[in-house]
Image (tube, rainbow, N blue to C red; front, side, top):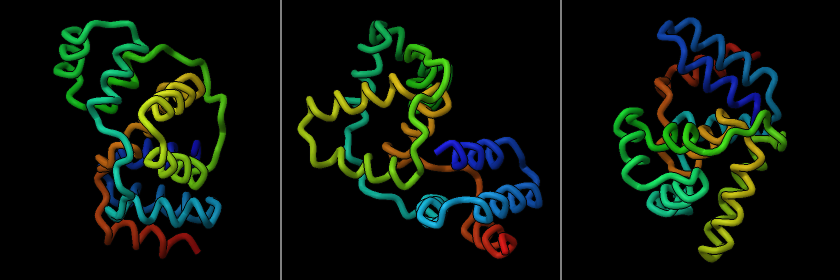
Length: 164
């Protein structure tokens, strides 16, 4: 997922169309085909069903961070994005301990829908304890379905066409 995270970061940090196309082309040129398919799907708005309620993720993040609800809510108000807020308040992990592919993570996320709440919580805690802050952020985006990075379908297709 590190390669996809680099793509996300590159797209998010520029407003230049040519730079976005370059980031997309670089990703599609070097990514595993299965990861490319997932990236194409995600970037063009075709996301899988959300497997966990946001209220549960928020409660688990507060619990794992050891903070009260009012403090979490104040952080959320300041940050303005739930995925980012959770990534920021969760205990730090120096580096990703799990370097799985985007396809692996998307399969893992889909599997959450088949778990009971306690199993979901244990799975989420495992992920949080094994991902760095950026990894947690993108994981929340993938789980929550709120995946907007400022590229249109046309731009994604242009990036893909430049990946030859």
